[in-house]
Length: 596
Image (tube, rainbow, N blue to C red; front, side):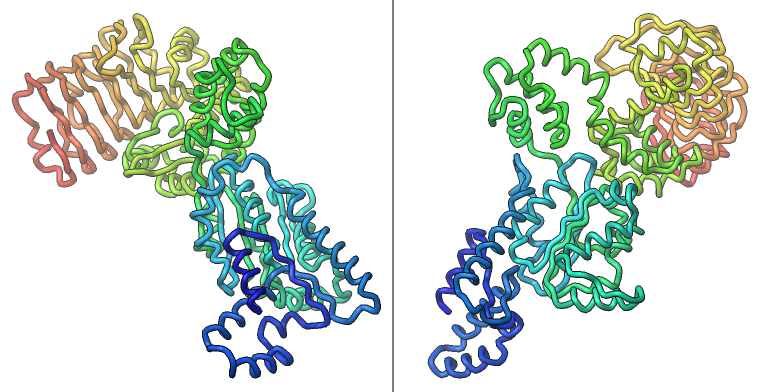
């Protein structure tokens, strides 16, 4: 018994593989110390302390729970028995290592967080969810867990690409494959579906199994593959990988792990393994390697794809490829990431693209208010994107991975190619200048955000924005430390489109906003350091206005009637030197939280 204790200690401490052979004995008798084992313990309890006896019982239970080999009856010839044992062990080891993933850089860091969730010593049946953005390494991590712990289970199944395989052959085919592997090819009983179900339930309830369901994209598939008919034995583990945390939440999986990107050092090592087939850059390639790694922001798929693509290429080719990536994403990376976008409904797609172009780093509440005014149901939309790992929320601000943002830009670019080059969203100076030259391209534009320091002199016509009936977002700005382009406009502009919900124009040369300006949809109005002397005449229907920022408008002389601005929260009038008095309606605004 002490030898067995030492064997199990080595297995747990050094992660050695142990394959027990149960010859002419029932593993359940070993697990629960029944019959001859119970008799033996009765004899030994008089000679050994209770603490030692309990340790032996624990070790026997752990041994019986391992994936071993069971020979219920005696062999006539011991040589045949030995040959059988060797064959079985060879098959098990082959199964363990045949699919072991390579380049497991940074895997130990993930294991630190996953091991407490897995709770390998617990006898409860436990499901663990691993989720995150596309290409972040969910499958690699699940495979590493599977390979490391498979020897502890009686049966194992790694069901790869559930999303893709279910589309090809259906859910039932995957279910049959799962059951077949767990029952190790054992033929199911013939008869009714109920009889088959009960047979499977009875068989699996006696087995400690390890299951990985990889890339699950819908709750109905997870439900189908984990039907109540699959009643697993004590200590079983089910690992589910997905891009959508909501699937795990809806299924009641409370043990969830979100996969984050690799550290810079780990990213550089993984990239170099693909680009140079060693863990560090070649001479002359270090800075270029760092540029490539910075582009990926720790995404393992991007690191592998980019590293493999650049392998054995010259420095000039590297420089050209990295320059191209700033404009056009690698197609393999793009296709993987876009799967998450394709799974969104139309409203969620609009929200995602708006964030990718205009709202990265913005406060969540501000973005939700804007989206609600556009009819996009901001709260549930933002929550959905977060649970699908397309955005993150930190400090109440919305974040987005660089590769996902670039994927969003590319989606709009490719859609424009299908529609005569008409872009729906613009955030590049070159695209904005082209838009001004071609009035036919304006009809589909929904949002514009341009850094005016990137443009020379800017000439606008009176109807520049009027011809954009779908425009919801307009932001013309320049960083405070940059020279701003000189804007030439007529004395007045024609009215902005009625759908505009966000209007920001730093250093706007207008004396006032256009006549017949419709502000009903307006949520944010930011006109810092502008030449505005008055906003508009009369009382506008400002039912959605939340923020009014007129800081630095030194020519501002009066404010309009705000009696209908029943949602206004933030008002900035800092350094409005010529503003002599406030309109009385401001004093009656009950929702105002901050005024300057």
